Image 1: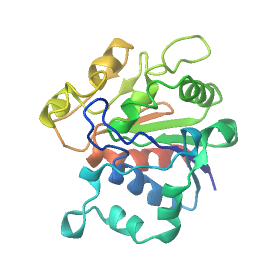
Image 2: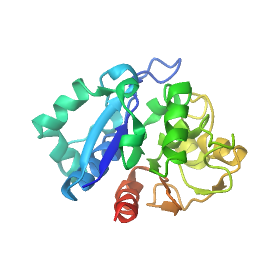
Image 3: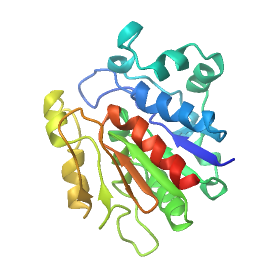
Length: 227
């Protein structure tokens, strides 16, 4: 059994727009159950232990909802974690085998700017842990460096929400930076496919996915690395 630390955004407002945001439900729920169903231990945390907000655009029901979201919504234990996750500040990432960061636009506003998040990612990487993220989650890599002071993503194959997809959802002006552009600026070998198509990338112990549809593939790659 491996131990997996899941770090979610706790930011519920989209910058200065006043619009609600948060974690993208599928990007949390799909890996959550992939890890649990494989027999691993999952711990959910946020900065300060703040509640996990769900981006309302991802809180879909009925036939349009991903199976993992429907399952999560009906899982009292899982829903309780959203209201009271653990505090990242209280965790030692070296006690875990993997760090996974789901996306949602919220990550652009708290995880991307946090010195603590950057330190935790760097520590996980330097200690040989699997580091994984999907969609807007790689915004958390913006300030993360390794022991040599190089960006975690420098020289590595990475995917994330593309500039084209950001244009497609009409939020280019709402976000503090374009994620694809930032990853390239940090020296990443950015890879993507067509908008909204599943695409996940593994480079050593680094796993990234392009968009919500990439959650399955990214989770499978994490599980493969964990053996």
